[in-house]
Length: 219
Image 1 (cartoon, one colour):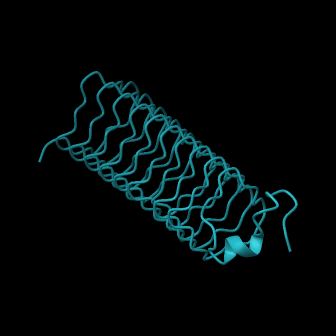
Image 2 (image 1 turned 135 degrees about the vertical axis):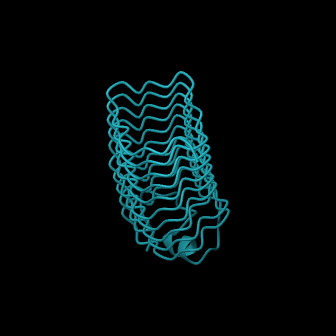
Image 3 (image 1 turned 30 degrees about the horizontal axis):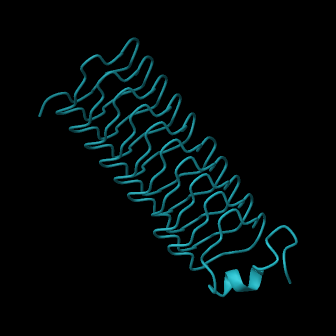
């Protein structure tokens, strides 16, 4: 069976069989691609809205500008290029995004429970209102990212670069921010209850009305 919305030269069966990795601009909306090996595949500009990619392997894949709106990506390996990708409402529970390029990506309303984002590049990404509770964001690049109202309770942000990030009304309760860069970040109204801030760069940081009760500022 061939999806009428994809190029006639590429069948869904050939995609599932891993016979081709040149899939730029392909339309795989709502397709069941669970567990598929798409390592190093070229999916730039691909339409994957609503696709099931549970447990899929996408290491080194190019998803530059791809639409993954509402995708099921539970447990997927997404150590890939997701520059400017649309991951709005995507389920990224326990997904592996270590070192992934998510610069300028839209992650609004995405589910990121126990997602690994250590060393990920998220500068300029939209994470407004997202729950990142307990996520691993060690060393992540979040410069200029929109984290307004984001739940980062218990998240590991040690050595993360949050320079100029928007963290207004964000929940950072019990988060680990040791040696993080918060220079110029906006934390107005943020909850930093019992957060670990040892070695943090707070130069020019806006902490207006932020809750700093129990915060650890020195070792």
